[in-house]
Image 1 (cartoon, rainbow, N blue to C red):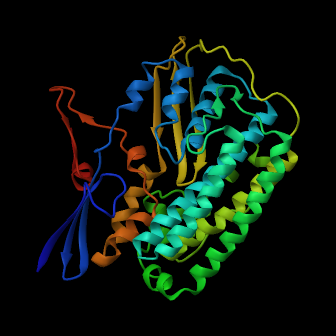
Image 2: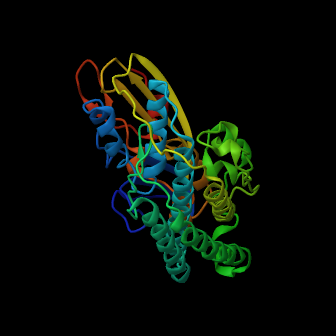
Image 3: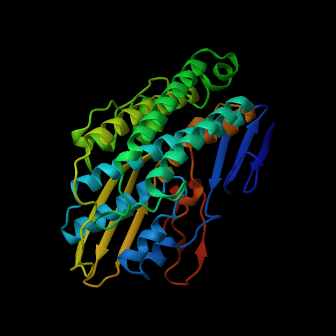
Length: 383
């Protein structure tokens, strides 16, 4: 007998609103329908109503967790439109802030994932270390969450020499904690029971559904924008692209934990090798008609921006494709054959950001009617 199990839009397992409609046979998930759009804010339309400079502040609020990578991607796209290159020191500072953001995002995810499997001690430990990262971000930018570091043509705040010892000491503490978490995921019976062979995404399916970021790398897909299409100064730094083969929740967790160690390694290099010089240049923002695309490796995966200029100081179009948007095509396959008890941790294994994802509303051009479609309806939809 088939039962319908609705989860959302408001549910303790969801930190942002989304709706999941599960068809369950006994305890086994037979089908799932996913609906978004509950936190759509019309940001892309709002970007066209402001100038390039003020759009930076709006871009920063697309995602509170990944605000630095959003502004970095946007600023790099506009710099490409304007034909300018930020100073070398600014690029190093961008990388430092970006990698601290990656550490912060992965630790925040680790805490929530631990909470989903009932391991609240690990939740508290992970968020203790998250506080350490936020303190380091505050030292550099003056802010703990929304750093407001990036601007078109460079960065607003410099890394002062007297702050370097504090940053390096904080990285040492984070490295020690992360190695403990890795040992925990390799040995703790609760974690192994709840995470191994759960929410599996095979390598073939990851490629088929165009998964990005840690989700793809946990299935053995060796991809990372920082290495494959380097930006800022990533081509001058040494780091490893972390992959696992299993494709389950455990593999996704290990990829993120090992990426924290790589991010620490990157920040250390950038802090020690950063050249002396200016941190920003002046840019003429009345940009002739041009278009640009920019891709970066956000904590959740590939972040894509498209920008179109029109000769004024405001963009004609800015389009954003976030990692969550790419990864949700894979989540249905991860649910099928699983149990109801696995639903929360499978959802959080892709580290979703629904506010980032809610980008587009479908509008009938003839009637002006706005409507939403399920994934199943969207696949069959014809105008």
